[in-house]
Image (cartoon, rainbow, N blue to C red; front, side, top):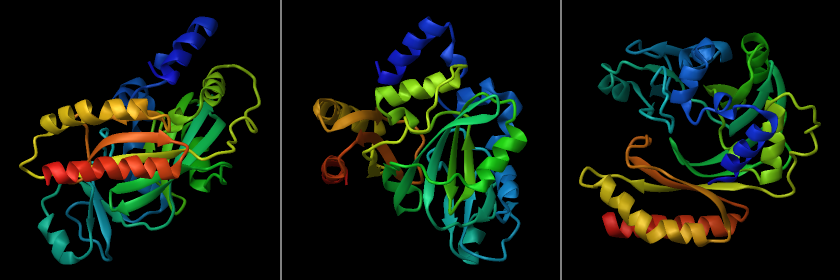
Length: 300
């Protein structure tokens, strides 16, 4: 049982609150839980809000590069997103039924907000460091939260004035590219911070401005594998479960981890297997390289 799961049980019993109705596990659950706000998952709506150039396929853009992606993606992980660099590549995707938007460059930040009755109570975020399009080498938390982009403030003020729940927003160069009505990676925080977060979600009056600042960084390392047609994902999953999951659990430098199922969404041909959380960049990078090299040598 995770720290978050234990806290949910403890606080549910203490305050007689059903946290399950405020904390969807994923976007599929969030879609059903918050039908009033489902429009926020529409990426063309978000592009319009942020003045990002976009159009449905197959309307031809006047400038490249662009990104083709689903109008709504409840699976996450950049599922079916494709970077297009020129008109020739665009033509090969002419029959794609998604939409395109301009390609943005700059800081890629994942913001986690706790909102109660339309008021932002908690802000915490991670900055992503990319390998290539769709894949991140690692994420690093901020010790001190940077200034919230105006687009996020306007979005909450205009559309979420009655909302209570979590909000995860991804921005590139301070422009919103995705909105999720759920937690992002804020669940990687230590127990005392998670307690503060959950108390802010319900009607408990506490000051959190100083309590959420950290004196250390949290690093999130994805473990990637380039997938080929010949690869059997179920076989690889069992291999990782038998050889590596136990080592991850026993590693004192790893505070939490996710282990993705074979059917879990992934970008293009890059499968994420683990996401490990650590306070040590060096140790996290070490185990990431070790597992990725092992997968390459065994399945390449």
